[in-house]
Length: 265
Figure 1 (cartoon, rainbow, N blue to C red):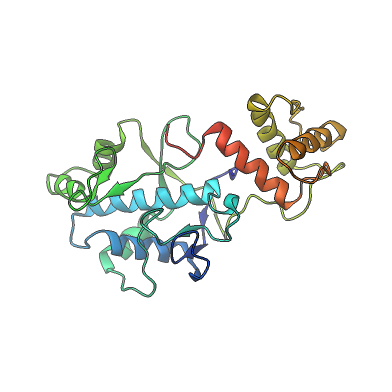
Figure 2 (figure 1 turned 90 degrees about the vertical axis):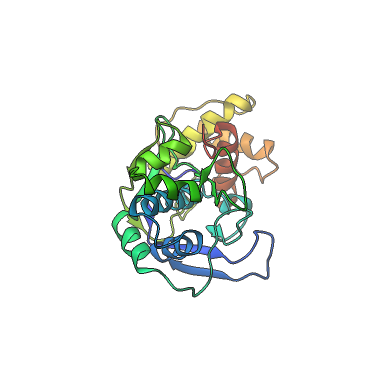
């Protein structure tokens, strides 16, 4: 799915294991504490300050990409991100946090990495560059050497992710962000969530022309209800014409797939 803004969440839910491990515990923790834990697990606190900032920005950008696209919620899970490095980033319950990393996160926790004309935070993958090779991602040890040479954080990042990237800033801080408005959308509803849903359906209709295009005016009328009903028919949902929780997230999931907004472009 896609949140309309990129908030810096106050809390996120971390699943301590691979997504499919239903026995793994979910941790409800402060976003800044999560970033500090991952950074303390992934990089060395004695590295140059610019290297710390570069790596923390990459960590934050990955995390906010998961928040923004609601990657796991769209797949039926009730968490934001996992501790599995096969899917996300290393997070260790109860680990010690290094003071230099803590100070750096406090200074830049609302920042993330963007590219022009790409609305979501970049999914800035990385590896250590020693035990694991990743020629198209940031290599952490190489970022350390660039920091030793006097490169700034953004110069380090552009070495790996391209010269067009820039540092963006979240406009708000919230609880655990969710696009779901908290109530069903139906005939007579009129708000920004209706418009968001109409915009997404119109994008989806380009790939699924059976779904009619509708006016994106934020007003839930008969034509919107009909488009929703056809969407529900196409994707095997109860054909109520009402956007409930399941329909909202299915629209979000298909929209992400059609528009490919969850990918770096």
